[in-house]
Length: 299
Image 1 (cartoon, rainbow, N blue to C red):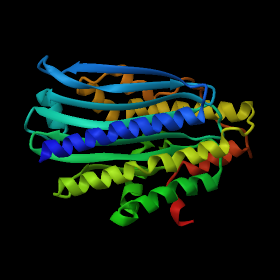
Image 2 (image 1 turned 60 degrees about the horizontal axis):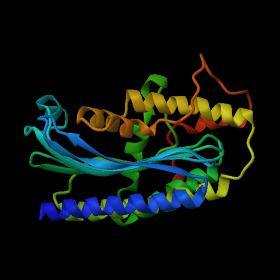
Image 3 (image 1 turned 60 degrees about the vertical axis):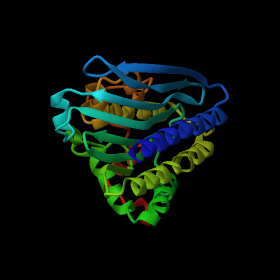
């Protein structure tokens, strides 16, 4: 039964990878796609699965990655303890994606949906979040409303939103959020793996509707050097979170994942400046107010 559910999830994330790939190609006809099918060895040096990495660059989408993987086998005892298992074996599958558009009026987005087994323990995790660079409140409301409606049948939007607000945070930056949140969940196990699987599949199917309409709406808007400068500095905060705090990055590296595929989440261009601050009374100064929890779906 579990093997059937695992394969069901693997088939789902690969189909979703293809659907998102088609949307990226629709949005950006200039897109160049590099696809890698990779394999890995487990902690004992045996075959341990692999994945499909798709890296995109184009005129509208500066860089993006849409990856799926199925990994399994032996893990180090230390890593087993970190993920709460007494059995030094694991199985994991998921889809992870990042889209960094070129136009600063279009937000960056990230999503991840995964299924993990460690010993006799099973759980799901994932979510989706938005990192905008321009204070378009209606876009933030739209994104959150899509996820609020997606979660409505399960009654978990409020809890998932709070977890997202609390997780994607640069604690070393006075608890400033990476973006304006979304939904996030981890170690989800209701006791019924099939029910949990169907919920996670359902939620993941809402990603396309949550983001690509915003790209369609904003990608042709004009922008200036100040807009781009703010975008590049905020990408710097994105890098800080991914390298200092992100558990997915650590999980991938510590489970002998593929480094290039894991770090594909980083933006192609970024700026770091000492004590950076946008101009006073600019839209970018206004945007800084939004990198803290707000009840967007209730506005």
